[in-house]
Image (cartoon, rainbow, N blue to C red; front, side):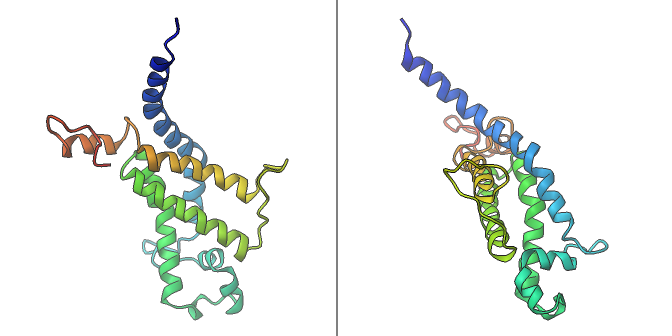
Length: 186
């Protein structure tokens, strides 16, 4: 006779190992280069390019404000500069942390926030169409596409980075003890 409880328990344990690793792999395969390329378009010239963002960085993040000031970023304030620098840095740092599996839950939560802000900027600032859920079209519309991004990131928030990660390696060292589980602090 088939023991469904045993099969379910086995699948649950396997899911705890496979889902986070798969979510990180898919993130790397689909979104890592996307976010890094987006970050590269925002860098200014030279070694200090992060702290001297390109004009396009302001236009991407604050399209309406840039139009209002005639695309003269010098007319924007410290707030705008800080948001552009922080957003640009986030496009490099958060995806890297997710791919290597370090501070994964926090990085995934940060990416979810980033995707929400990015989506609102695309819709409100750039006038992109939202598309709609529960319709026939699911090709490259913001609500459909970004919902899948957030789903993968949510797996990482709830499940952590998985067994092949720096979180697991660091967690095993920090929580060493007779009753500690590797990665328990994460």
